[in-house]
Structure formats: C-alpha cells, structure tokens
Length: 258
Image 1 (cartoon, rainbow, N blue to C red):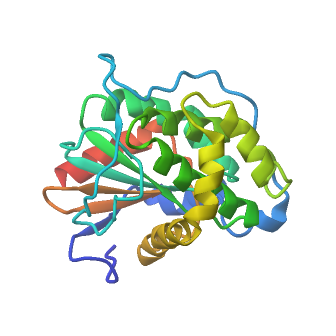
Image 2 (cartoon, helix red, strand yellow):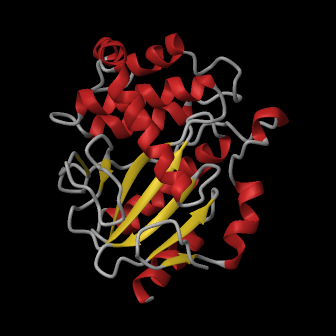
C-alpha cells in the first residue's frame, strides 16, 4: 500500500494483521467513551537506558530526518549511526501504550537499540483527554530540562508515567499528581519542569502540534503507533498497536530487506 501524502520514500504496511489488530491492541478515539481499562498492574521488567559500558542511549540533536521528523525537541534513544529509525507516538493515558512499554519495549532496547541497529524517536500524540495534553507538555519539558546533562533521566521519567498510569480521564494525570510522580524520578527537577511548562508554553505546544501533524500525515489515528524508516534506502513501514516483539522483529527485517 502506498501513502501518497508523505515524502517520496516508499511506504510499506508491515504485516497484514497490523491494521486489523489496531482496534484491540491500540487506543483509538473509541477508548474515550468505552471506560475500558487495560491491565495496569506493575511490571518489574528492568528498563535499560544506557549501554553496558555506561554510555547513555539517549541524546539530543538538531537533525531533521529524511522522513521529515524534526528531532530538535524530541528524545532520541540509540546510536546516531543506526540504520533504522523507529518513530514512536504514544499517549500517557493509553493502556495499550503501557502494555507496549512494559512487555515489548525493554526487549527492543536490548536486542536492537543497544547493539546499534535501531534508534527510537519518542513523539507525543495526546488525544484521550485534556490530561493527555498535560502529560505530553510535561514530557516535552522534562526532556528540555535533562537533555544536556542527564538525558537518561527522561527514560526513567517516561517509564514511571506508564508504571503509575491509572484509568483514562480518571484524574491520575492531573498536573499536581504528575509533578508528584516527577519529583520521585531520579535526575529530574520537578520545580524546573513546572517552570518550563509556564515559561515555554507556546514552544512546547508547537512541538506537540508538530508531532501530531506528523502522525496524521501518515494516517496514524491511535496509539501506540510506529513508523520504521530505513535511513539509507528511505523505505518505511507502519506498525499499529501494542504488537508482540515477534512482529517488530519481522518488521525490522522486512524494511531492511525491502
């Protein structure tokens, strides 16, 4: 299938099941009124944000990718020389994003990001409720405050948000509660984050809007959602929903071989 709205790079939809599974493995607008809450139990899976030698996997860059993703305001996880990019859109209130974070993300970090095969760009797509927007703005500000000196702290904060996730639009993601969670994340200054949200409000909103427009341009309507992009061949494909590790493995291989 070809996306005629995007850049000239070739678009592939990875796996015939990806689209059909999105309704049951990802958050869509239907979720806002469904009241359905996925498993929000704690997961003790260890999340890595640095290589075994202690080198951080996260970094800031002013690069704009050939796919058209502006990286200046977004966390990048993995080697700058990785042949594959994976653009990852999420909503902190989405239970399927939590499922991906706790079950699949750690394996992708270990098997693909740490070895230098894939780098992941973390993007925002808040749409479940106003609290989603609040969490997205806070994420942008956390990155602004840690990217120069303590970039790994963003991954700890990001994981903590999903660990503490409650039912969508239940109030768990109100600003005061998010700041309380932030205050307990090592390396993140909650006071500085709160200040950023006030002082850089327009820039933060513009950055979120850019993330949302990028997702809409490529037909992404829910979360979690991913576009895998070969930086050399400029071939790309889409994965939608909290898919299992095995599907991502096939997706990476398919893009590399395409």
